[in-house]
Image 1 (cartoon, helix red, strand yellow):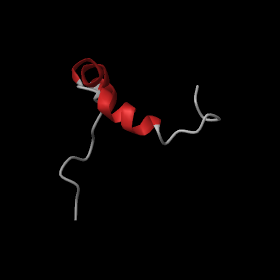
Image 2: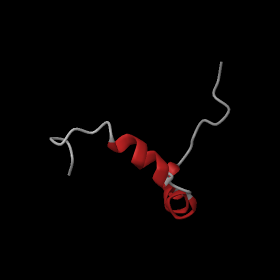
Image 3: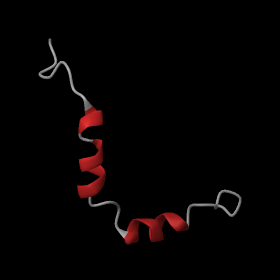
Image 4: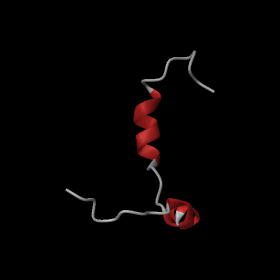
Length: 42
């Protein structure tokens, strides 16, 4: 089976993706904060 798109240049659209991507909601980081140990925090 052949892939529907053979040659994709993601580099051409990477800047647009970064500019228009919604990102993660703050609530996700609040929930994940309890999972991170003090040794892993930046």
